[in-house]
Length: 117
Length: 115
Image 1: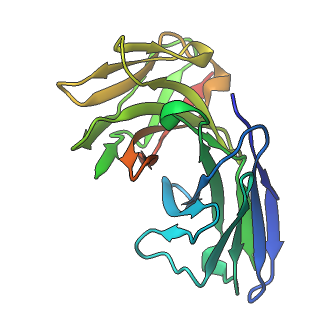
Image 2: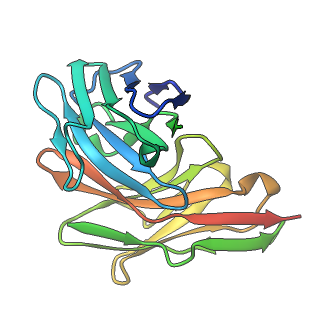
Image 3: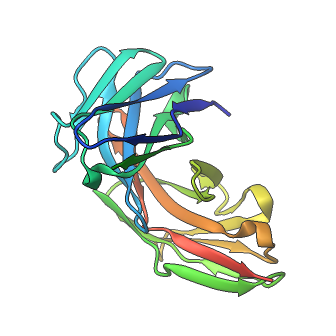
């Protein structure tokens, strides 16, 4: 199947700094990518939809100024957590719909474990 | 809008015993159904999916699931579990949302296989 690569897999940062997470579709183009957040012992919650060439669409309750999304090309979307705080510590996962007709499946990155100290 | 309910947050089972992880969904439109597995500190791996056709779907690692439209269920089963099946399992539904498939996940079920 298609491959989505996410980097870094783990990052520890100081409170107040910004962290960038990259999501790449390695062997296909993705005009749309999704960013999820997973709190401990909880499910994945969709944060935003990243659209190549246009602004991201954020889910209700997600601060767009805090979680900056840039979909710079057909194979790369980035999520920047700005002025990170300990409560932003979480597992972040990106996904891209399967290429071709129907977009029936989502391919997920490996996830990024963010720890803010 | 769609939603997914996984009734069991944790399921302990002895090795080589059968297991069923339950999933119910609700949606006002047609959906696709998925089961994903997540090993510790890793991303999601697709186990199986139901798009159309036969309601019994076979996936990787010996898992299968049955789509039951009348009961809006998509329970995951394995006849004999292995220690390596210990992981968290997520049921998910996707539905068309403005031209792309929006995926909604259940809360997850932790399968713990006891030796």
